[in-house]
Image 1 (cartoon, rainbow, N blue to C red):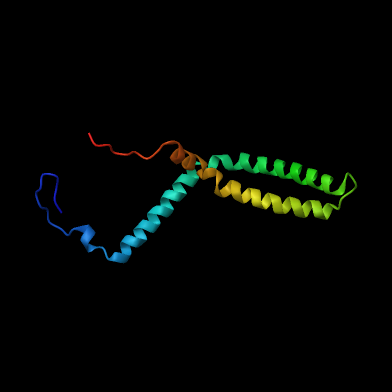
Image 2 (image 1 turned 45 degrees about the vertical axis):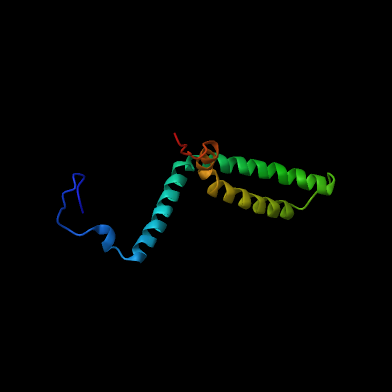
Length: 118
């Protein structure tokens, strides 16, 4: 290893001492850590998203069954089954996608920097 001024110091170079498999594990753990950090930073929107998903599911399942049954009575079991299925799908989207949404939109809004020759 060398300092900035070019003077060699005692000790081994840490990059050459690592086996090839260690660098693969480092990149996977770095990706996982970065993903978890970004998810945690945006996770404040989850409670509001889950409440909105529940209200949307209640309204959509109710209207869907009213249209299907023409205003007549419909079975409560069918209503609950559709509500549970719809809410499970909506909740999974809220939990997985919503916290990462600011990161995804930030990347879409700012184009990659391109170096131009001068």
